[in-house]
Structures are given as C-alpha cells and as structure tokens.
Image (cartoon, rainbow, N blue to C red; front, side, top):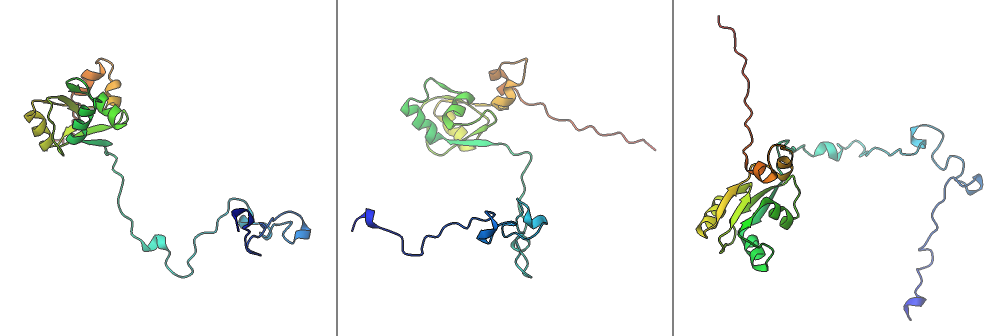
Length: 185
C-alpha cells in the first residue's frame, strides 16, 4: 500500500449541488428560494433566531468603551535599551524619539514611555514622552540625563515656526475655559 493507491471511501465525496441550472435538475427557475420577496434576493441572511429563548446578544451585558483621549503609548524597558546599546543598535550618547520610533517599529503618532525593568550601565541622554520613577532614577544614577518630550513626531512636524526637535520639547498650550460672567443683581 502506498499513497498513490489511497482513495476516499465510497459515498464520502459528493458533487456540489448546482442550483439554477435548468428545470430538469429539480432546482432550476427559482433555485430553491421560492417566489420573489426579500428572501429570494442575493445578500439576504436569516437573522439569528433562537426560538423563544432570549438571544445571546441580549443575554450578555454591554461593557467597556473607547476613550477619545486615548494615547497610543509604546513602552520600553531599560533592559531593552541596554541590550540595544550592547548590540550596537544605539551608538552615541543620545537616544532621540526618532531612534525609539525606529527601534520599536512605532509610528509618528506614538508616545514612548521608558519603564524601569532592568539596569542601564552607560551614561546616556534619553528623550521620551514619559518615564517611570524607577527608570528616571536609574538613568540619572548611571550618569545619564532624562529629557521629556511633549508632542508626538506627527504633532511636532505640523508646527511651522520650529524645527521638529524644538517642537517636540515645547509644552502644549493649556486650554483655558471661558466662563460667562453672570449679571450681578
């Protein structure tokens, strides 16, 4: 017995039912869909019907929401940065937001946060949007410097008067709510 002699069992393989191929087949004309109406048209799908039972979309609760203020934050540990320095992916004494974007496969709209997992031995100047307290302490302890960026690369590139590097470090203006003065009685 070899692979070329294997065959499916008798009756296991059936031809596909070809509807709408003439009246002699028994499924011509209306192709088994009955006469007219929405159900006879293409694109119709039967709604999920569970009989009298309460359907699953009503049994399960609604939960969660999508915040409109959500920031896409990419996180990096100090151990990752140290590995990149040891491997030669980071050269020099400074890591910019551009470097973080390239190393993390991030986008121009991403914020970057440095977390304190691991140790860093080289004195390096790191520019990122957020730092955990432990990461900040470890970087400074190693003789490095922490620089906080306020804008994403995408936001910084839209500021015309400044270069992207300067715009990254410029704080955003805070929105001031205007309060209507009420008429004094």
